[in-house]
Length: 79
Image (cartoon, rainbow, N blue to C red; front, side, top):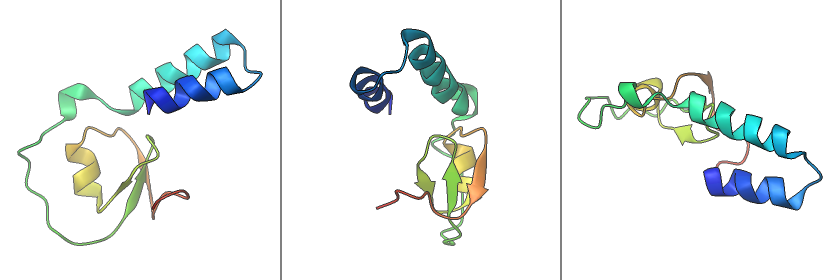
């Protein structure tokens, strides 16, 4: 995601300050202290879109990835 944001900043007329702000917002989206690779989640598919613009199969999967906020449903650009 950081590479994508870097390219976005280079490819647009955004100021350096706004690019820096966007990168900080993305970093705040995932709390490393909440990442739990060994956490147990069900396999139920009930997608959520994380603030990092990644689709997670359910809220539990987003939580264990350390995502701080998400909305119900797949992300618009999910593939």
